[in-house]
Length: 499
Image (cartoon, rainbow, N blue to C red):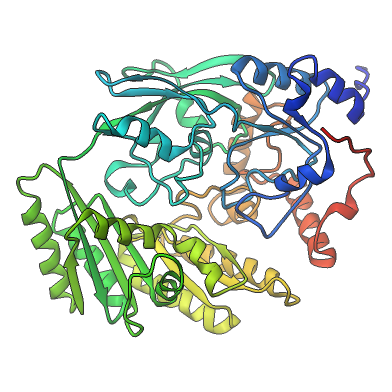
């Protein structure tokens, strides 16, 4: 029988890592590691064993080979803006932080391609190529902070995914360090890849299949003209009907966003005050872009559809400044919730557009049933809902109630013919909700695929796909949080080292 390899203690592990990277690329101090206790999903926290900051593909591969050799769990991390707990170290992982790998490596305007490292911030790519009239289309609300590597892991979308698609539509190839440290190329920089679509597997896999260290993305020429329309409605039903009518008319907006009354109240208390009337139930932000010729006609058609649905006020932005304010108010809506609630958890269900009114009513019913306020901010054009459940973690039981309410919302979405995530991923937050969608056999098939890449389950273990033992671990951690407020009491004592 094969003998199990002796575990490295922290001192030994740091010594071995120091042969691959400099000591200033290693963090072992418990206080410094606290920043990695959670990502944008703050309802659960856990302490990492170490954090390392590689600066090249070779360093990532060396680190991963070492960790694989000694069967030490690890997880890749970008900016930590993810909203489903995908970057939380639930198993005392070593965090492979990719933020120092933030370079734009090359741009090929002729072939509409750019190559970036995973730590490159989303908006910075557009800023760097924007002076030449180009941009990168995926635009998550966190695009001023989130990284393209993180976008790849979660298959992030954004407001303009209605017309332009999500990350998987814009990433064509990548250099990837597999969970055993092997370096491979996936995808094809030009043309369709031959063989299995491994990029299709990697994008949205939440770091469970490997670590992308160089990413080839499509870049687009900026549209010639843009028209942005804001429409305010007395009733949510009127706004929902407008969404369906616009799409049915054959108009494909670049974006179609909706906010409800509570979300508007939060935004107007933030730094992005628009001045929404207090008594309207919904606002739509609709954008069309393309060739200047014909764009005015598209905007007029949308305005007419809004008027047919009893819009109270509808207007077209008259300047880039006005358009920017409107978009800032929408993109900062999540952060603005802090103005009206000490805590919130955001969900990410998807439903058919035709079910918007029905599902929003059901969410309102849950709010009345639980006593928790729920704001709705979402990509109305493709039915990607983002209910923001307000709670106060200082009130006993409210955190659990908020999480249970979020799970019930996802069940409502599935029952309406939708799914449990549009762009935020599964992480640990929704892992048990995968059972709403898949049978045990379905999940076993996905586990089999993961096992080909990650047979020892060392790379971001316990995320994305429920596994009986892992689900039990998540439930145990949730129970500890409920009782103690954190899980650190369950961890073995470890000597910590400053770095």
